[in-house]
Picture 1 (cartoon, rainbow over the protein chains, first blue to last red):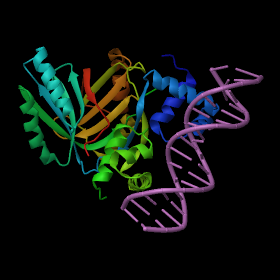
Picture 2 (cartoon, helix red, strand yellow; picture 1 turned 135 degrees about the horizontal axis):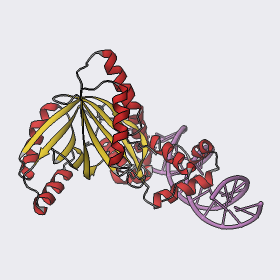
Picture 3 (cartoon, rainbow over the protein chains, first blue to last red; picture 1 turned 90 degrees about the vertical axis):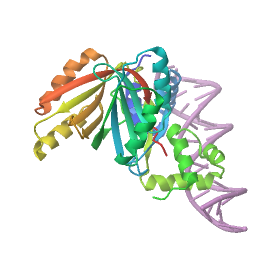
Picture 4 (spheres, helix red, strand yellow; picture 1 turned 180 degrees about the horizontal axis):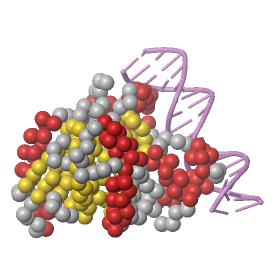
Length: 151
Length: 151
DNA sequence: CGTGAAACTCTCTACGG
DNA sequence: CCGTAGAGAGTTTCACG
């Protein structure tokens, strides 16, 4: 999809704060409300704007621990991969989950109440599918954690 | 802040889709619009709801590469840390940035147009502050990437 | 804390430039 | 493709149980 400067500015504003009215966005980009509204809907229909969500404070929910889990496996057959992918993605503690290049095969980011809860999660994880090596490391400080992509 | 079942359900709905009207939320939780509205504002004022944002499709923006960078350093003085933290957090390519426990001192997640663009980013990174070891690994597949926390 | 009704604001559509 | 104006929908704020 083609984007001009107006579209990009609208995207930057919306991914910083989706509560703004169309009129506020219009004032900020130097257009009137109607074309701004049209541009937003066009970008939504194109799937460029995936949706609007509320961001919740992780600490406020009592989820004080963010952990990264590094998984290696000897199995790479389609059946294993399917089972592992679905099983892990289904877990609500799992915020991000990637198949990786290099040393580690999978990278999983999870949110837990306490670091001590990792033990229980680990047991759930290895129950899903056989894994040859699992190691984890926790975040001591989240210096930056944004949903804003560079546009 | 104290949360009851209604509050938690509202949070789950809002972090899945913030476009829903208060009336729709009210129907879903089995209340009328007014108390739902009150609960939402209460959670906003408590900082539990950090805000509403638009999520943009990373591929659609032409950002086809997600990379994780693992940084080790020999320096741990406050001055170095301050400079490194601010400098890295300021970069728009940086989506997440954590100070870690264990082997690796810092973990950085970035979004780039292509993997080949990592070279230029690497140069920007090492220009910020001296680093003893930097390695990177790219995501071949994002199996899960959500902003929804378990509540 | 929950309900129901009224003022206000915003969004959205139609139409003209 | 942008702007203006009006209709419709949603939110917000009352008074009240």
